[in-house]
Length: 319
Image (tube, rainbow, N blue to C red; front, side, top):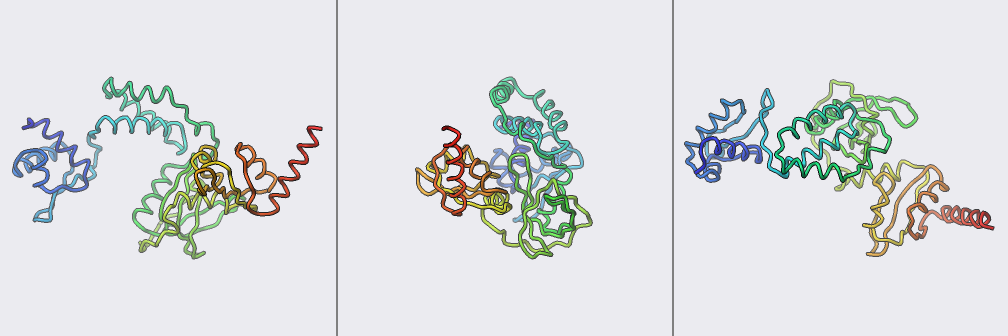
């Protein structure tokens, strides 16, 4: 049987890992009686952990949110994951969170055992993040939190939105999910006035509370919201759209095509379709050629004409 201190740590770990436990399940996991579990729960409460309990056969124990942040137990893999995630967050993407991430990372690395510090150090030393070199507007973490809370609470959100041209409009929407890609964040929401689903860039959103009322959740516009947003920002948002067959597998193409540059659709193990968009067809031709794959234009026919003109121009340059 575990001694009291070790048992308390084990009990705390179980409460942090699971939403709710029955007293019998905790007693079985710890190898003690339900009475001992109740005493240990009281000890955790004395230490500042807000453990809620419900009586009866359907009752149980649940770790709640406290007024102060209590110590958190992490296993080895969780500690490494948190450290790596904090270092990535310190690289940017959410405005103002870089310094906070560095401070949290410094505290975590200070208490990491040597074996874990070496693992984190190796990952950091031999990983080169590409996102650090991609320019993009930062997102206010307070706005991000406010949007996430509105998604969680299913309440209408009021905000000002600045479009690509800088025009500001007032919107009322029912937020569903936040989607991030590279250094940008997007909000998928039902626009109440337009009666349709919309995708909003979070860095262009200025919340204008009060929000509400609460509403019933709507059926989302797609099962795969990441693909839905990818299509919206890489294809639907542009005046010129095209479908191109790439002579390469979808897995290989995905190494060169980001979600913001196009949507890939597997055809077979040797080819895939690329759905993409651009402001001009000649720009689209250059973009596709720079991928380095053989391709065939499926639509529109005008894109084929642009390919021919660029081919003739290159021929003249070589003569």
